[in-house]
Length: 190
Image 1 (cartoon, rainbow, N blue to C red):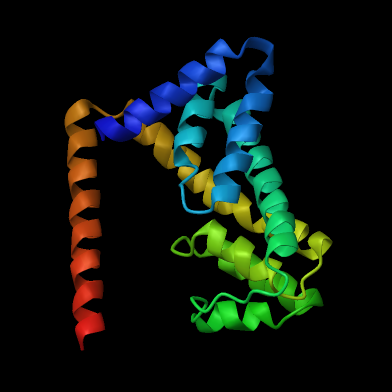
Image 2: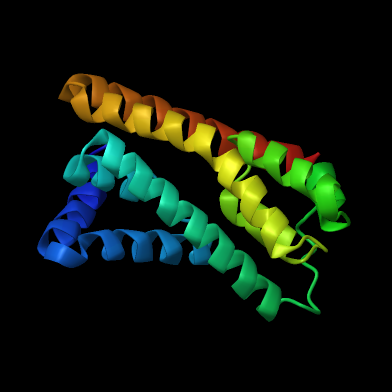
């Protein structure tokens, strides 16, 4: 947990030292994380809540995540027009890849509501689909809100928890990650 808190503290310090540009720095960090695609945004959410308070931090994180998703979508679409990644084996992701219009809207919305599908994967899949930017923006804006509310609430609870509780939480998370890794390796052998 110390690693997570250090990251959050570094981001908080960067925001605080940015003075009047702290809001822009936060949004830019969210965009960067979204474009990279595999780094969790929870650290920026935690820093935003710490620096700006729960409500303002939540709103700022929401704006940053939506901006990041749309910019990622646009960049991925421009950069991957002829490239279709083979890692998109999930049935729902394949369906999204071939969808457009309202069907794409509902698929993006539903995928955004599933906490175990990374945002970067949804952004990339939507970018190589026939989905319009407007449909992607609206579905993402609606779909990210519940997940971000849960993330912000969880971050607040962890930040307010005692050090012992934080250590237990990080230990549980590490155990789950390690067990998942070994289970995935076992399944590949079969």
